Length: 125
Image (cartoon, rainbow, N blue to C red; front, top):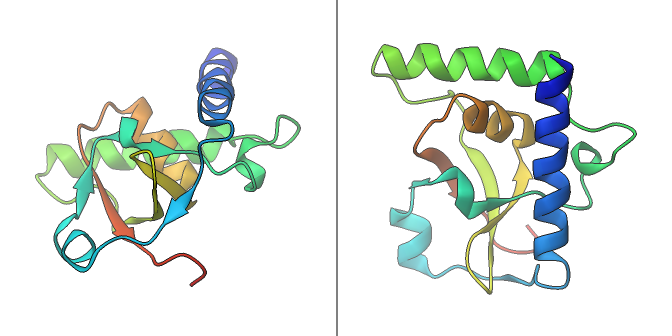
């Protein structure tokens, strides 16, 4: 289990470094908010202000594994993965910033889910 945390921790650190200075949140258009309901996990970026990204706290292995198992179960049953979508903001340079759902995102990444359900929020809301 420790290697899974190390791999996810490295993925988080890589994403933080890659997105440094590029996390400019913009307002999504009406049609994007209405019709963009699923994205590839690679389009989601961790929020540096969330405790999930802090090395001393980081992702909880048990929670991440639980979400991984739920995602696999839902997918095998043909159900939407997770009952609640991940809440995000649109980023100017593409992709989305995770507002709520970091552990669900990590579980979906670990389970290799091809698309994750999202809800796009307006900045500041």
